[in-house]
Amino acid sequence: MLISRRLPESVMADAKARFDVTCRDTTEPMDHGECVAALRAYDLILPTLGDAFTAEAFAEVPEPRAKLLANFGVGYNHIDVAAARAAGVEVSNTPGAVTDATADIAMTLILMATRRAGEGERLVRQGAWDGWHPVQMLGMHFSGKTVCVIGMGRIGQAIAKRCHFGFGCRIIYVNRSEKTTDFPAEQLPMEAALAQADVVVLATPGGSETRHLIGAPQLAAMQEHAILVNISRGDVIDEAALIKALQEAQIAGAGLDVYEQEPHVPEALRAMENVTLLPHLGTAALEVREDMGRMALDNVIAVAEGRAAPNAV
Image (tube, rainbow, N blue to C red; front, side):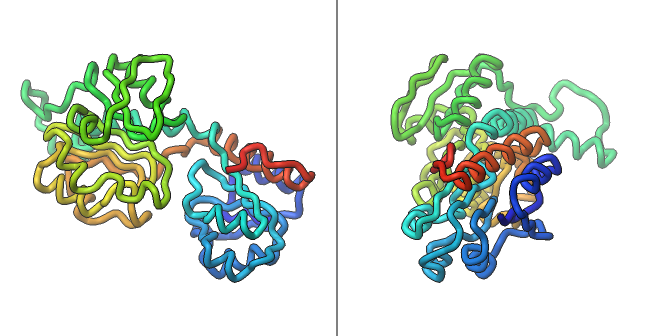
């Protein structure tokens, strides 16, 4: 079994107790050549974000030794699932384990961006704060605002619940299908939803269907005081269009945990005071990563024992 990048120690110990484990000694994603070699050499592979199991990789290994790609994470747009299936390789992910942690990071970004917390912290650290006064660093009061969630799956609903029950927000959403929720939420077409929202949160899956879902036309539809938050995948936003919209004050700010060419973050974004930037912290809590690892291992164990992966995609 191959683990593409080192996981928490408890997960590594569990894996080694059940399997002959090889773990790469780098934190960099697997490139094309490594993925091709892994498909030939291992029965079971536990990859994660960015590992390039593309159609081209499977084309070079039409009859792979590998039987499973047990992805560590809910997003799997770095894996060509159709090509994997065609080659007889099952693909699984870790959906439930990441929901609350990712929703919590969305709330962190919402509150930081609306209340200018990053900008304020930098002011204090630089020794530039000259004391409180009535009109200093006025941000958006988030309670009671209209929040548009784009992508109303598990994570989107968890974000919406926090906004509604915790902050009394009105929830509108954009989704391919209508959702039944235990809180008031109105489904709207994209342009209508963007035009009404004070805060827009992206919680869609990644992949070709959602690439540049938010571009110049969508940004132009938003209100000038609105904040855009992304905890999904970086390429869901056309980053160049976002930079232009922020520079021209079409929208008030943004909170980002993911980036189009991750880990590269454009200098233009880094220079803006009205943008909160996090280094892909969505699931970065030990107990969450342990839960993800155990869920991935459950998928590996099932396939090794001749059963279907419980979280097949």
